[in-house]
Amino acid sequence: MRVLFDAFWWERGPVSNRHLMISMITEWAELYPQDEIVVALREKDRDRAEGLPARARVVTSRLSPQGVSAMLELPILARKVKADVIFAHNFTPLWHPSVVFLHDVLFITNPEWFTRKERLYFALMPLSARRARAIVTSSRSEAARIDGAIAARTPTTAVGLGLGDRLEVAESRPAVLADVDRFLLTVGRLNVRKNLAFTCQAAVRSGAVSPEFPLVIAGSVHGRTEDWPEEVRDAIDSGSIVVTGYVSDPELAWLYSHCRAFLFLSRGEGFGLPPLEAMRAGAEVIASDIPVMREILGPYASFVDTADSRELETQIRRVAAASRTDHLSTEAREWASSFSWERTIDGIRSVAASAAAPERTLT
Image 1 (tube, rainbow, N blue to C red):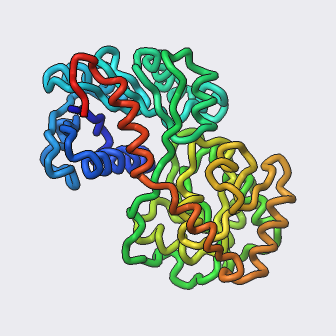
Image 2 (image 1 turned 60 degrees about the vertical axis):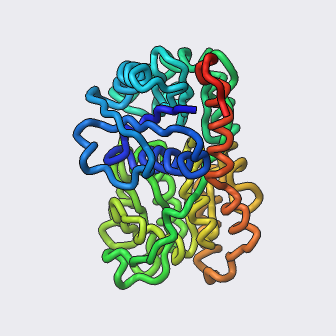
């Protein structure tokens, strides 16, 4: 089977989207050596792209942003290379057999979490998705949301996500934490959906955080942001809350393996890799009580209602009073490690084979 992959974000793009795109292509090439891999890179990235599968054929795209390139340019490239099927992200090619991976459709169900510019751009996703032969996504919760929001040809297939070995690197302590050994951690883009103002307020009101035991926020600004309450701004100024900005993989690995607990109080997710990554590193996870978090984290996390900060305040005081070793769970680590790329790619490849051009013989 010859597959044309959307590789628009190979060199640059949203961190999580880029990571998933690269992981899916590289894992597919390793698991299915009989398939012909064609990747569509931006023309300006072709000469500096690193880590491409050795046997991958490269074609280049010129249109942007990613949605426009996926819808209008990928089908032209697919016809040129005689691809059986296109595998795209979020935006579906308007012709040619294709499978699209929809990360989420929260912009439909919860538009208040997004900027007007984002909503206008994302509006093309459900319109183009009706052209897909198949839609896949990461969780059963998100599959149900997509099926409720989009009148697609077929039901959405949940294929999961894998953790992979991205964080199996030599750890590096972030310089901003040179003198800090005890801390709470949360990871994510600094936007309203991640609910960081709620998390920060609960941490401050718990009375547990201080410059010696701060809440560390690893992430950069992206999308619609929320205003920090005055008490949160004061905590940032005092060092009780530390905002690191972007961190490298070695730094993130260190943060996961040394935090006292990992907090993830997002209002909505399609999946949620950070709490699984933290769990695999041995951190206790405290997450928002929403369906996707229950699905992904199983019985191995503590769940709190984000409508009442007192629950989170109580949990923060509890973990602050204990040592990290009190929270380690072999079962939790094994649960997180069970999310493999092999299982995800097997699911996607099965869907893609069914969606491929019928005149080709598939193996």
